[in-house]
Image (tube, rainbow, N blue to C red):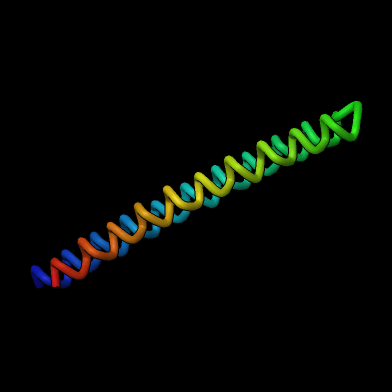
Length: 78
């Protein structure tokens, strides 16, 4: 039972992390799209898109690292 509780808690932490990432990612994408639609020049549009891509990549890498750590912690519990 102790192992089952650890597995359950580990998967719950992973699911919460994924849900939070998806929500934040959607919000960031929506905000970037609004900025892009409001761009007055092609240069500004490229700037907005570049900033969004950079931020999205950095967030993805940070999240992937966090999820990897959660899976590693789960594996140690077993």
